[in-house]
Length: 114
Length: 115
Image 1 (tube, rainbow over the protein chains, first blue to last red):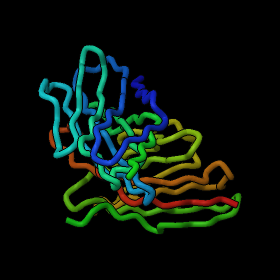
Image 2: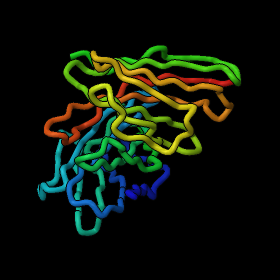
Image 3: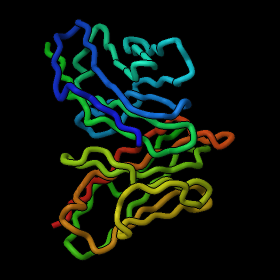
Image 4: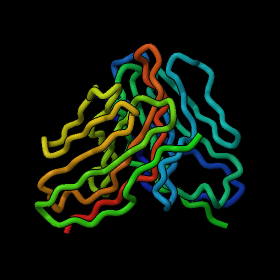
């Protein structure tokens, strides 16, 4: 079974600085997606970034980028130029190509301080 | 495109009652998945429907059931409610091509409180 581990329950960062959230996963599958979702206090889950396992290039979306290390089964999220609106719970998630059963980590609560 | 919508947004029920939650996916998305989110257990997969058929099911008791209609809208039903069913229920829709799933987009959730 796939498992996703986020080892940092809480993190904080000063506005405009950079922060990295960690995620590791365990799977025997070769075709899968990895995601970072953001859940602000409104509770709406918002897709931040996604990575397909077969792609060696790390995904980037504006201020958000990932460091995908397939052999190490590591998928960290880097947030550059942190903004107050980035304050939220961040969930790392795994999903295989053939199964919509997405597995989530426990989440990291990120606080951006002014 | 309109996003995933869920109704109602909030529900209060008492133990033993049953409840039905509704989810309308993004237009063109035919896969709908349901998740339960609680502080203790985190986000857990309930089930997924595609073309009116349940494709996958998580590890939940039979009190939790669902269905999908021909327009891809989905409903989730919980019978004989227990206090532990209090949670945020999230629905997500995705587009499938060639049997391969794609990114799931979430609705705002239904907050269920069981008294």
